[in-house]
Length: 292
Length: 203
Image 1 (spheres, rainbow over the protein chains, first blue to last red):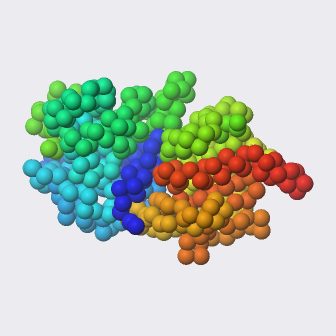
Image 2: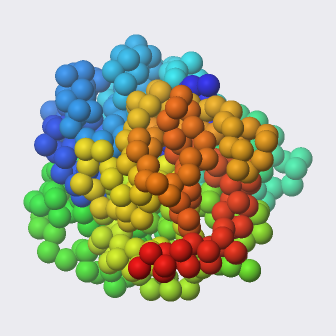
Image 3: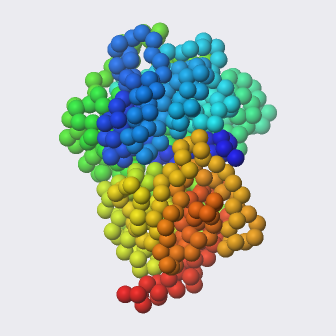
């Protein structure tokens, strides 16, 4: 049996406690692997550049993805546009290990996400709240991440989205049985999925932080808030010393409760990426608003 | 009752802790060098073997663990855990514990789209087949004289034991079947002591 839910969610379980890094070249992929990344995300441009350059952002050139796959032994993920099931089929045919149906790229469908159940390759999707997470899971997402606000180096949106999901899970679990259906409806969550969350007391799939993580402290904070691991997009290769920062963020995710260790790994990392205030981005330009 | 530590640097350690608890063992998360002295046995979970290996080196845990394993502490590695236990890793100089006299090939079945589930005969733990979950799984391609093959797929070893060392390519922690965890807990009794004596006579 291939492409089962257990195999799809299972690979995400193996990524827990790890850092998944955005890379645009085989050389960056090697740096990420050597720093201890548990997977890499193959891209043509990191979110900060996509934001700066504007225009339509699409799936990366297969040559870029393939060269990155050949460069490292760890799992390779790649991004498809929201709703673009043919980009996703192309990435599956290339043999990528996970597809990120991502708001970082320009959406290809303004109503529908990809029917992810129809694929052998697993998918990760972003969310800002529990309803969004459970809708993506109902479509077949085997892993969830916060959306945050990609390419900003500002962790505030990832924190907001993580806290929102955790709050809604706590409420859902505390409700009396006869109020569950209405609460699920008010969150826009499929009822079956809401019941599954109540049974487990948490999301039934792995939940990573993403969108604005730039420092070891940011990464450790997301782990404290209950995330299972972190994606770092622009934060590493837009910083002054990518090797050192990448290694430090890996250490911070494993040792997020050890503050002496966090102090040690946060030292002398060079310039962090230049951050952006969220209020300086108009709502229409916020990537987190993409997805339905 | 023995305390079974689960290496909790990265990967599916939560699932192994849960399986051990259901099987009735006392458990402990092993995140730092200081945790190593307090355990009677160790599980190395699935995850990313290169990541876990680097974290073992950074945390100064590789050598103290090697010493405990060489002096007979029972250890079980699944998937990435198996890779970290093997003496030889094909095409890789990544950090490892190297206490299992075997050669391993990483990602031997291909990429994630080639990951699979299969019924597997593991006579050592009972006649009923084991529902085995293989995720970007390794296989063992060569074994030393004291290594016993407990299960194979297409002639390739996917579960082995050498004295106090147990290793599988697949993930029992992702199923409800506790037989492998119970078998391992069994190794923490008489079997483990035997392994210890044998190691001593070799020296």
